[in-house]
Structures are given as C-alpha cells and as structure tokens.
Amino acid sequence: MNILITSASKKVTLVKCFKNAIEKEGGGKVYAADINPLSAALYMADGHFLVPPDNDPEFIAALIDICKAHKIRLIVPTRDEELPVFAASREMFSSIGTAIMVAPPETIAICQDKRMFVDYCLLRGVGTPRRYNISSDGMVLDSISYPAFLKPRFGKGGSGTARVDNEDSLRYLLRSEPEAIVQEYVQAPEYAIDVFVDFAGQVISAVPRERVWVFGGESFIGKTVNDPALILGAVRLSGMLGLVGHNTIQCFLDGGEVKFIEINPRYGGGASLGIAAGADTPRFLIKLLKGEKLNPVIGEFKDSLYMLRYTDEMYMDSPYEKAAK
Image (cartoon, rainbow, N blue to C red; front, side, top):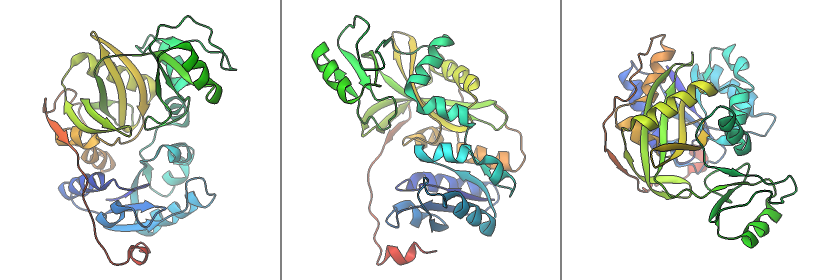
C-alpha cells in the first residue's frame, strides 16, 4: 500500500502521520515529491522524487511514471494550485490503479473562487458573513457598515486580506483588487473543521478546532471543540459540495450562528490536531483503498485537546544529491 504526497515542502508531520497509518494497516511506503530539493518532508519519507511544477506540461507524465514504477495506490495533493490539475486527471491515474484524494473539478472551482463560494452559500441558505455588492469595475454599490473585511477573489494563506475602516481605504484597495470580496467584519472565534468524506460521498468524521493563534494563514495553536452547530453545519456543506477525502472548512461561530468563509479541499496546516484527537484520516484513506467500509464516527474525538506547533531543524551534507532518488 504505497502512498505519494505531492508538494511535500515542509509537511513533515503529514508524512509521519501517513507512515504511522500505513504501519498500522499492514505496511507499505510513503513517498514524497516536490520541485525543491531543499524540502524537509522529502527526507522524512521512505523515498522521494523531484518533479516538474504543476503548470509544466510534463508534470502529469512524470507522476504517472512514478506511480507505475513504485506501485502507488494513492496520491495525496497538498497544494492549492495542483488541485485543479489532479481533478482533471483522475481518470488517467485510475486507469493505472492509482486513486487521487481530490474532489471533482467543479467542486475544486467553487472552493478556490471565493466569490463563487459565497454565491453558492447564499443560494443554498448556508451561513456566511454578509457580502457587500461591488461592481465589476470596483465601484461600491452598497451602504457599508465599517469596519469591513476585504479579501482577494483568488488567494490563500490570508495574503491580500485587510480590515477596512472607511470608504477611502476601501476605494484605494479596490483600485488594485477590483474583484475583491468585501464582507462584514466578524469579531468572533474562528474555527477550522477537519472533515473526512469517503469516495462515495459519505461524511465519516468532522473535528472542529479553534484557531487560537494563526500566523501566515496557518494555525500554530489550536484546540478541538466538540460543538454540534459547527459539526452539523460542516457535514451538511460537505455533502452538498461533493467533497472527497480530508478537507479543511473555515468558519466563524458568531453568537451561535455558523458563518462559513472558505474551504481548503486538502489537508490544512493544523490537520494533525484532528488526527491526534482520534479522527485518523490517513488511516481512513488506507482502509478505503483496502476495500473496507468505514462507519461514520462524527463527533467521536477528544475534546479540548490543544496543539502547540513549533519549528525543528534538519541537517545533511548534500540534499541536492539525495533528492535524486
């Protein structure tokens, strides 16, 4: 049961989680791939590969060769930009016996286009922060209650987001980002909900975690929270969208109302907290590949478990040579 984690970068903990899961499920290897030989996670895997960028025409061909040569049963993408590429290539990999933890192309498109995601929620009665109408040329069409919150239509890691305190500031920001989404500024606890969905669309687990301290868009201090409103809201939204595998759904809990803000249809930076709390999603994936049926364990995890992330160091003589494996 061999697994390949792509865009491995510094996701050392994720590699370790999959190695642990494979050991518990009968053995196999966890491989890692990246474009950068200085990616730490490459050297924690059982084997590793340098591959072309995901926008290179040779990217898919290189991965197919790897999957054939090393009998890869599952690819786990971890970078937003590669998700549409993999979503469009699922059949090619399926034909050689390799599954990909990725949702259909239309689902990926909704998750990665923040305007499309807000429209999706509003049309289906899913809670989301109030959106103010901005014209296609960046003109403000609504009366806005300040402070407001601006975020790029496409983006990740909090890049380009800003609190806006007055109309002059808003107009200034819209000049450089006319397609930005402008919403109410929500002053409430923020949560990420790790939701696992099997390949048939059944939600297996949902673990909310409060984002206690966030840096660069990633949670570095988190705490699991067994809140029924968060869990039920995330389960409903996951089923509607047709998510697959492990997903990170972000939201606010504002006076008892869940307001969803975005979905990362992949493992997020703080996903290890949900795994440690009892929702071992790498092991879930391996069980599915073995043909086992998973029973839902929604709400079955350790509550109030804290995660404190920290950096570590790795030393080696010549990573450029070692990355040629």
